[in-house]
Image (cartoon, rainbow, N blue to C red; front, side, top):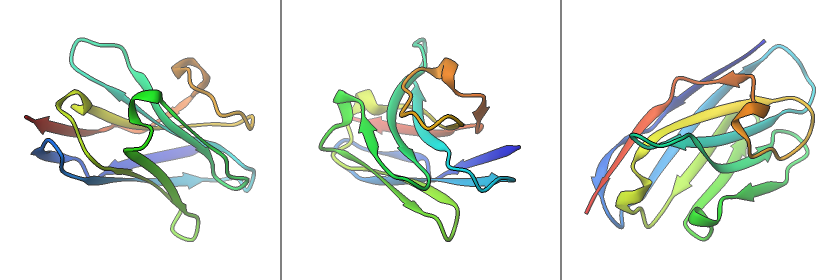
Length: 124
C-alpha cells in the first residue's frame, strides 16, 4: 500500500519560487518511481517530473526544464519539487503519484497511486 500527501501550494506572482512536498508512506522496501503531474482547469493531467526513490534518475517535461528541480529526502520519505521562475501557465493542481516497476514513466495510466493534489496559482 502506498499513500501520498502533497503540500506547499499557494498563490504567487510570476517569477516567484515555490517548493512542493510529497510525503510518501510505503509498506515495502522496494524501489518505486515518484512523479509530479499537474492539471490546469479544462486540461488533461500532464507529466511534470519523475524520479526513482532509491536508485535515482530524473526526467523532466520540456516546459519545466531549467526552472523546476526534483529532490528527495529519503530519511523523511519526502519528494520535493522546487519551482523557480514561475509563469502563469504553471497554474494547476499539482499531484504526486507513485508506481512500481522501475521505469521513469510519463503517462498517468502507469500510476496506480495518487495524492489529492495541491493548488498552485501564478498571476501575471
